[in-house]
Image (tube, rainbow, N blue to C red):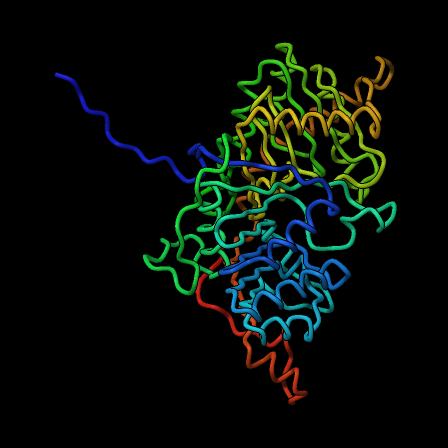
Length: 432
């Protein structure tokens, strides 16, 4: 007699979804025109999440596209992080709200003596979904420092545009998040104009939409990286701005290199924060001795969060490989299984390594070997235990605050007590 296996439905972040098409977008020059054009062409709905929205030339162009969409009846939802986007003016937010944009702020903490206290567990995702059919995900924020004319501090970064069934999964997630229902069961009948058919097959790529939160998916992004490293056979390229991962991640990189895999790591050589390079360099000796090749990108600050393994597996998203992203922030990546996309990403990263990077060479043996070994030992154990320590940090319940039209209107009219974005009424529900 045969035994029936119990049915099992994998979690959201473990299922390959076939039939998708992905296009790599490098830097703001490729990303912003595509997103702004998509918003201008939207017919039903725009859902946008971002960590940073600045009121500079990029933020103002986004502002205009969102206003125009709302004015023609498109349902527009925007969620920004209160720490990453702290200084938006009342008029900037008020115009959006008065036009009908549902503008929400993730954990807009109060200042104490001029300083914000809500530094941990940020909403770090960068997602856009237009009409439930076209999606964008990556590491690019809405600020002028993502375009080359910003100068030497302009960031090198990546995003993807996607079509296909995976967009429906990302759309459901993002909509629940901006409505403040993250972590709950989705409503049976979504409100507004968002009801639509599932996106049709658009290509041959398989994909997984994977997120990190502080409840049900605490290590999903790191887990996908580790599984890919474990299965690597001939090449791994990781380009990441903030690199200080956990012990198990480093162990898989070292094991892959020791079994003959060409493992390459692209990090910041001109960091936007000095501590970034200092922290990453503490791992250099440990990785170089195992055969990992390390390159520092020196043209400008590297802000990318991309990787590829062998000939098909790739990932693009918002997650850095540091304690904030892997243990505290809310993040989102897409995992892509497609030979053509992998090959194109490899070509772009190879161009970076060949033309804009300095390769780090192992230090020769000498009198400071003992000091290097002691430092590696301390860093090794710090990485090993950090995920446990992170769990002890304050797990405040971050809220999503919706800016109400009445408050924005009062500010626009100059009424006493009106305070635009700062006079917000908390929306029921906690963030994902």
